[in-house]
Amino acid sequence: MIFGCSTSTAPGAPPRISTDAGQYVARPSGGSGTYQLYSFRLIATYRNERSDTVFLANCFPNVPTPTYGVVLANGSRSTTVGYNPTYACVGHDQQIAVPPGQSHTDTLIVQGPNMWDGKTGIPFGIMEGRFTLLYQAQTCRGDGMCRLPESFGLSNPFEVTIAAP
Image (cartoon, one colour):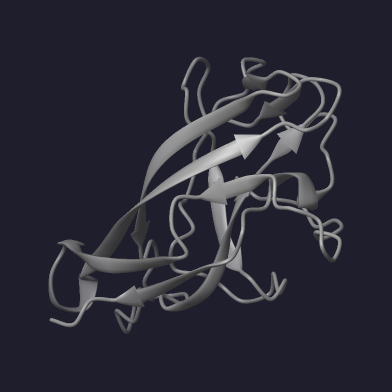
């Protein structure tokens, strides 16, 4: 899934998504050598402070976890982050509904890198640094329909470091 660009969080505005920690350690979780994978568990809570229902994009109908992106906390969308999953989703209208004043909590296993250079084996994307979680939030059901500005799907910033071997 590709997230479109739009406005960022206004200064001083609280994030719509809160994470369970401000720092995470990514630990080896599979693969080996050049193709070593790292992961960490992140619990995210989306709060709907709007007066209407917000729908969170999900990959398949009735899947209770939203699709997500991990982006640099500085607002740059031109730099690849190694924790961004690759999605192959189906079209549907069963996005996750979050009624006004309610919250939706997810436990995500964030893993990366998710892509490597086919010739060199070098992974793509930044794996350590300051990031934010991004959900696609919208005001109606349907794939990519009625999207809210990006600021409605951003989390607080968090730090990720790679565990020492």
